Every structure is written in structure tokens, then in C-alpha cells.
Length: 76
Image (cartoon, rainbow, N blue to C red; front, side, top):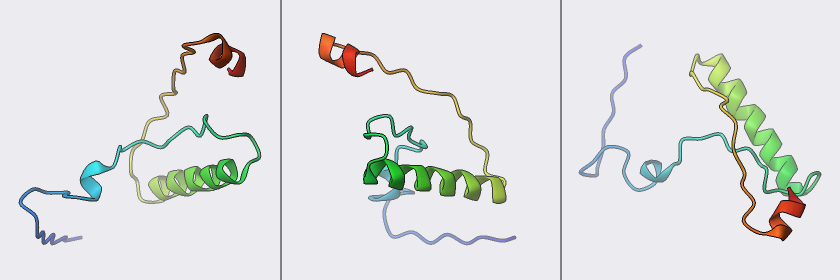
């Protein structure tokens, strides 16, 4: 496969792609069963399926969530 990339900006991966965090989010902030949680789950599956099908390596390393107040601790 040969790829040719043309760019308009001074630097590679400019305005839009340059701001991408590069992670597959955990969805921990969404209420279970909510529309956002359902959309997140579908997007996570689609992203991982795409990576698997196209031999894109990713690592599931987990996430640490820390409570900073009694209310947050209760919610965890």
C-alpha cells in the first residue's frame, strides 16, 4: 500500500486531529443505561472492532478514578 498525504497547515495533524486525545474513553461518567452510555458503548465497540480488523494496536490499561469529596466517594 502506498499513501500520499497532502497538508495545508504548517504542522502535521493540524486543527482538528491535533486536538484528539488518542484514547478510547471508559464512559465511567455516564449514567448506566442512559442514551449517552449506550452511544459510548457502541462507539467503544466500533473503535475496538476497527482497530482489530485493521491491525491497529491499542492497549486497555484501565483508569483510576479518585474521589475528592465525600459526595464523590459515595457516587463511586
